[in-house]
Image 1: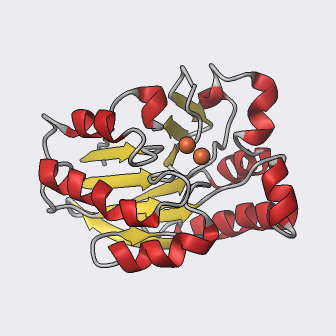
Image 2: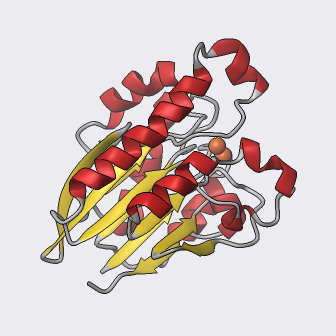
Length: 231
Ligand SMILES: [Fe+2]
Ligand SMILES: [Fe+2]
């Protein structure tokens, strides 16, 4: 089955390279969007990203996503209103979709950072607890899907491992991802993790135990990530 994934379109900032990346692609079986799809809280741009996808690829496949840090929490309700009938957005939730006769269990979360940014520290009360809770929640959702689906995917915006942050300053990992999510991977081994956020990565793929991790940030990868999964 053919899965496409992208993050960090920051629409309209990288609109041009996004539209170029879409042109010439064949329709997938599933399209995943892992956050920072719009720039700085521009909720009204979200449908334009879906328009671009559907203009190039049609709409005969599920679109599933999670939020990034630029989909600020106070505009998420607005985004849902704009795109609710066109895609599924998972915010610490899971869903199961049938693709090609196989069941895919998908968990979506923004993920966590080891260290909150100074903005988060100032503006989001209890941010450390929120980050800790997100990892616990993702682990529990993945556990619930174990044995019930053919393939488990974790969609997250921040990175779960340092390997797909290579190219960034390694001292910055605390602001790119979280070791708590690395533990989630080693504890419950989802088949695939798709993340974004790491714009300057030079390594896009890693294995953590049996789990395949892909960084699909558009500014890093320079194209839509195409995954061919055999089940
Ligand atoms: Fe980003
Ligand atoms: Fe981000």
